[in-house]
Length: 255
Ligand SMILES: NC(=O)c1ccc[n+]([C@@H]2O[C@H](COP(=O)([O-])OP(=O)(O)OC[C@H]3O[C@@H](n4cnc5c(N)ncnc54)[C@H](OP(=O)(O)O)[C@@H]3O)[C@@H](O)[C@H]2O)c1
Image 1: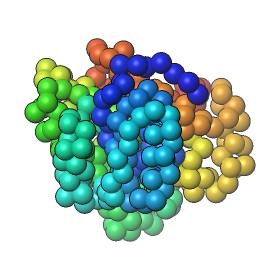
Image 2: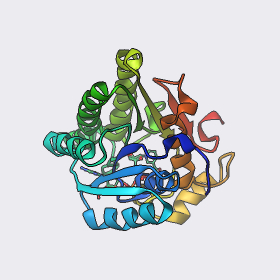
Image 3: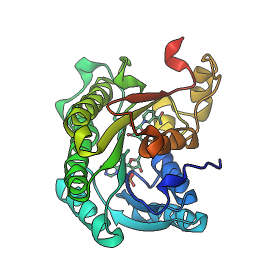
């Protein structure tokens, strides 16, 4: 999918969860506009393959092994981004985990905490260190990957749903704190997108597509269909937008 958000050219963006799905698609889309992309995830080899695509498309790439559960990993990743490319202009805090679906009363505290650790603490650590770097260099833009379950409930996913509501809370509050200092903070709220995570949740492509056939779009979204809205929110085209959750769901939640 070709696009022309050219003000991102030559700027530096850190993506967590760049090894797969929407993170990888966003890295490739940033490569197409000649951006510098820092690809962070636990699976370095998978990030290396995406980095090759970024470079082939005309961008620059740096791969870092990062576990977003570990604050030190993120702190180091932000530091390395600034050292390698000179500054950090933006970030897509996209790493996330679904957890195992089950009714709330059957969920262990450990299962609940594991999802909250990655999806909430991971985004908090990332924003904390990215914002500190952006305050030093005069501004930037952050996009967090929330979900439509940041807006509505979803049975058997109380951990995941609570975590994504928290991501929106972080997004809105940080947007208020930093707009005047030149940092915009938004989220995307995707509906079901065809990635390894949704296939884990639905069990198969067929089950995912069967549910999505009942929606206005009549199909699940593709990772690239989230990547371009992320680029829009990172770009100057979204200069007056902060604290928003942009729903990208093919009309699923307005039925
Ligand atoms: N797919 C959907 O339908 C959907 C809908 C709404 C929102 N989302 C959200 O979109 C985001 C991306 O998910 P996806 O659908 O693209 O799934 P995916 O293809 O399974 O990708 C998940 C990514 O998160 C990374 N990750 C998970 N835990 C991590 C950790 N502790 N440290 C670093 N990276 C970690 C994974 O990298 P490694 O395994 O290499 O570390 C991987 O790159 C998630 O936040 C998810 O909640 C997904």
